[in-house]
Image (cartoon, one colour):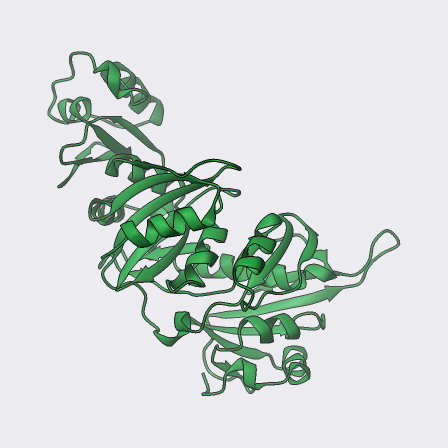
Length: 306
Length: 76
């Protein structure tokens, strides 16, 4: 990838690339080539990926060649957008206004698919001093909100969606991407971190109203992930008005929960399972219920030290 | 700290000083949690006895056996 950053390219030029041969983007260790004729992608990409290496004359190998193409509406609906990778369209077409969320969801799918030689866990993950803090959670558990709060307060973002663990070394790979916020968490993060860059909310998506937070630049300064592996596993659960409640949990319970959240669990052989169990054995594990971000981030800062 | 044993199609992990084991069937991706002592007894070929009440909701020895069969595990 060239030495230019995406933020150095104007939005009209980005749009021209997207409509032409494509825009190259380096995301973690992945090289992505993005094309789109929707006219809806240049602005959010420029805001969120401004610190990412980019290429306006793409050449060479790309891990993903992504196309977001406009589909003309019919009598009953407006124009839509379809995501395509290597000739496959894994998602149904969505309204044109959801072009950018569809790009992010599609890229998640690409990264998870192409990371199959590692263990891929549905979980937010941040890093400090080489140790990863993994935060798995079901939708609504508050993991992305918590991830955003930590990343904007000094933890290094590795991913708000996918924890990729090497089966050989136990290290966690970093694929830092914009953090997805939903509904009420958008205003919570906006008011708590007024200097953070957020996209305009997109309403009526299948996940509700969503907006994305630009990853803080430190997430991109170091290309490596968490070399020392996973130090802590925290299962957050947001419950309105709940006081902070911390429960240490066994490694067995944590491993069982992680397996439930592992995308490629069916591909884990004995060695893969043993590797994941070994990673969990080295971590401190907690279930934490919270309602106040200040409470849980303070607890994490105090507890989750190397 | 960690012990991983294999019985037929099932691989199980136990952790030092913990009373639960995590069982996993590669390929299918099925997993379950059970009482570590019962799993280790099963691996060592001595399935017997009942499980401590305070270990619920982990599976008892009998439940473990039947659930492993339900998994389709080849334990021979």
